[in-house]
Image (cartoon, rainbow, N blue to C red; front, top):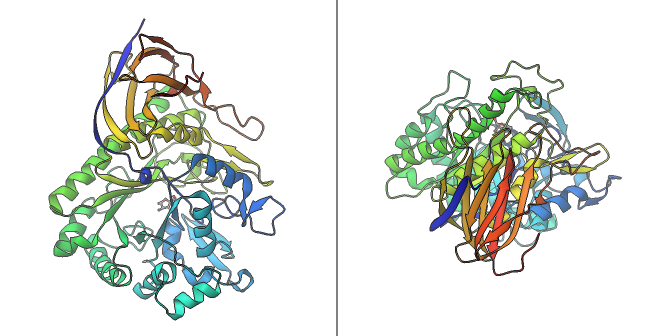
Length: 505
Ligand code: AHR
């Protein structure tokens, strides 16, 4: 018996490819040992990047990559990472309490080379904490200019004659905390100076200001009205802000794998509240920047389990040594899908998003071991299942009927879009143990493919069982030409695609 009927309606905005970004920080084993193994490594590599990681990322196609931090960005001096690798200094890599030696072998040329290899847009995070306006203006010149200057000649001597097309530049990171513990007014004045001078160097650069909209962060000394103070202080200079950065980590799901039912639903509920954070940010922007569009740069998001941090909620033993590495389960993939659904609904105000992080750290897409073996996490797969929505037109959806969760909220939700190949729906069933029969309309198009990701809530992939959680075809039948019927398993994400092509089962 059909329990849930899902119908898509009108288009209301474009799901920018920039909403499907990732984040690579020089932190723990994300950049070094994860992405980058070096050109002389015994691990097969492509220009120094682990080839298995490159292959997986080419398959996924992240549209945007933020680098080099995070908190690390406010310690990063770009000149340390150019020129012959043997001449680069060893520096202290520091972020989130980790202190690791950094040989700077992964620098500007290498990172931008990776972006070219993956066809991903780069997003460079600039140093405000220990840097200077001159240093960031020089980096921008070095990367983007074609005017004959010493910096541009130096770039050519280092192997790159033509500039890279980098549009997105962050002016600091979490400047209210690790980026220098600014107060909002001081940061606004600093931002104004940076942005004015950077615009002289690259008038079309898109600049990202640091915002704050996370009511649940445990630190008590944060200015909860940071965004309001920042935009008010900028006043007539608010036009210098193209994007306002906000971050959100979900902290309240209890243990990473050994969680109970209440923890399971708590994490999914927290992921669902992410949309409200975006809406609050959007309202502040609309109120204080009328007539000038500022996009919301959600440039760090995802789950941060208690085992992988020394702060915040969670009565769970921390796991030394702290490397910000954590389990990545089916529950985490469901949480990611819930957030993505909200991103689609907010696509007219959300300008970019970067999940934290790409390899090994936090809600990683990929995990590597010491031999370079690379495993796709459930989170990787859930993002891959959203590919039909990337760059497509978001459609309104109506979900009628269906099971409810213990708190009375609906178990099933859906997002839909119309792209060049047809219409795609992605549905989520949050229920821990109840399957739901669904009817989905193809709006005149025929079903092509239905794919499901499901499994035990704590199930993960590892080198021994890399495909334990992986997308599989889902059985369906049609009633009439375009009414698609299938069963959403408990704890599942399903993407149903309609088009003119052949049915693939
Ligand atoms: O992603 C890990 C850290 O979380 C980043 O360095 C920082 O910006 C945030 O606090």
